[in-house]
Structure formats: structure tokens, C-alpha cells
Length: 80
Image (cartoon, rainbow, N blue to C red; front, side, top):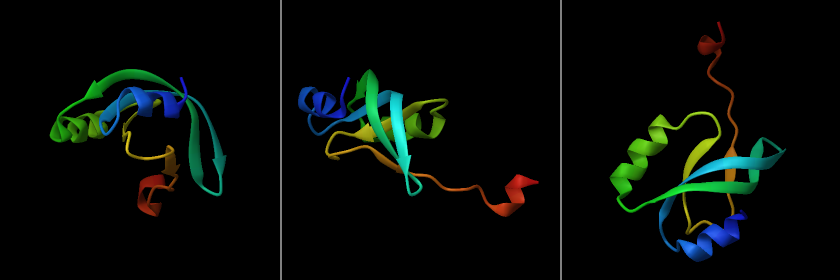
């Protein structure tokens, strides 16, 4: 499913998604295709869900025109 489809079905909501396809440019991961897991009505529930996401799952708000995730390296002390 394309992000624009999710945005049209669930306007102005948080959604839990599985990333199916993406590409990276300049330390930004751009998501091309997703699978909708579920819509999340409560913002505090969305935050809790985001903090526990694993693998290719993310929580995102459909108010955003695209899914762009900044990729960061862990701090030096975590690489030991």
C-alpha cells in the first residue's frame, strides 16, 4: 500500500505500519510501501506503541506528506 492511500483512508490520525519497501538518500530513509497494521486514535497510545516498535514497524501521523526517517548512528559508547 502506498502512503498516500493510507493518508486518504485515515486522515489526521496515527497509524501503526510495517515498512515493506524503502530507500535511503543522505541518511534519510524514505518509505515507499507499507502495510497498515492498525489506526491509533489516542495520541498517548501512539507514543507508547512507538516506543515499543520492533523490526520494520513504525508509528506515523497521516498529516505528514511523506515518511522520511532520519537515520542516526548510536552514540560512541554504545558501540563497545
